[in-house]
Image (cartoon, rainbow, N blue to C red):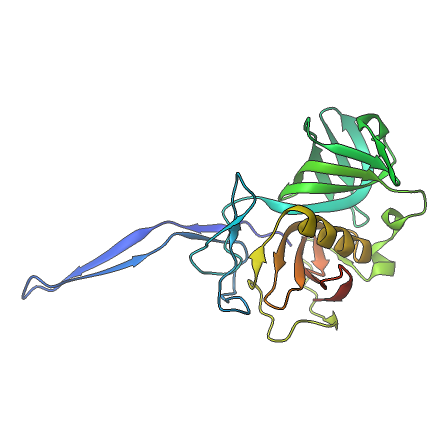
Length: 246
């Protein structure tokens, strides 16, 4: 389930004591909470941080769960529905609709060979990597999947639980979850490591949209998955192999 961020604005609370000039000022920094009901810090005691809009490097958050200032690296795997350059739409294996925006810098690949935007046609299975903002992705790379490849995996065989409005959340854990893991841990990453973690997560659990990847204190990654009921967190080791999910 996708939850809209709650933005807490910077504010000051000033209390004056009537008998004198003593003034107590409590200042709190503004921050965004991407998911409600959780407050945690990373394995090394640092809150999750936000990607810089220009460099892709993390910038410090001021606390809270999954603090972030904007879109982050991620991706989706699905079948092309419509093509209207410079964009197209895909449907994941669970029926999640995703809009993909192409740019002059977007690269294309078909199988293991370089390709072009002309390879994006209705019915093709594609892996899209790029900057994710909800269910819209600005593509840095589009990979047309081989026939019968991972793009054809279904939610039932992968164990993914599709999102259904009004359905109770699914709570289960499989594989290895990092010790003392708590939602909101880690530092948001971008570039090659985010792409590799996203690709591994979607190959194992297709159907959702990875809207950010964080690196945990033990060197592993957590790919945050939206648009499905389960899993919401997919754990990828340093060799970019999925080791667990919850």
